[in-house]
Length: 213
Image (cartoon, rainbow, N blue to C red):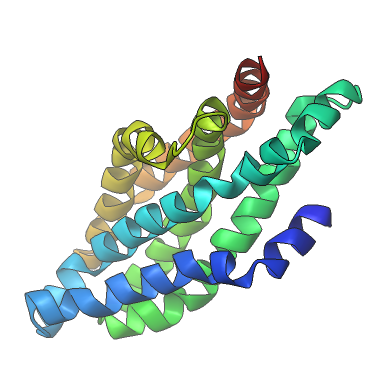
């Protein structure tokens, strides 16, 4: 509740990633042309690239404020398991950053001329892939939270890691557009998410301890 309250108090930082995503999705058709077939072909990739880039905008503040005001150090000294705190913060980040994207996705799909089947597969990839973005991103944030202006380093660390997710997600939607099987891509994204759920909390806790020392 504390993290959610603080997030909604900072409305400008809260809206920045969402507005960036909307701007990218709406400007892309102006650059590549308004043809329905062209938009349908590149639409899933546009949404996923915009989601990844917008997540990088809000990722840095995941532990930043707690590190600056000393709350993170107090949490460590309190004896509260740090991996539990990391899980709660990642969950709050996902709720604040990606749930609005899921709510906006029907409008974005309509704007990019996606078929209903493509939209359903896109929703599945977003539902499985966006928690993965938060979990993996939190590890990098934990490593760079003590650095001055670590946003650029954070982007350099995370963009290569997110490329496989982007490939499998767009491949699944393209397969749906061609009426081909797409369960394999969905299963791979689900497996990546399960591995991240198992490994990421401990990795985030360790990264935060390293940054505090």
